[in-house]
Length: 143
Image (cartoon, rainbow, N blue to C red):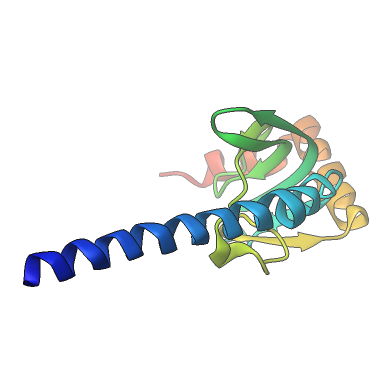
């Protein structure tokens, strides 16, 4: 008797899980992916930034991989605590699961900033790449 009830409940659970999957897939396809695609050009900073370490990103484009979904291609500029500056192109896949549907930016540890702020920081870091003053000062202070 209990075996029959378990089989029946498992069939019902499978049916409900399939329905949930279809509803979530429709949400992702119709709402989330178009929203993510519109983020090209957005600028961000790490919420872990401190005075000594800064990381900023700008979404340059999105690329879709049939198996793994959408990826952002981003410019990233970074200043670390010793004064080293780097700029490079990186990629990251935004979160599309339901826990992130209402997030402004579906990436962990990121907040949106204006393009003006991003370009200002980028100019400062490019200037630092030319002068190397922060790195020079850090090296001189080492014991």
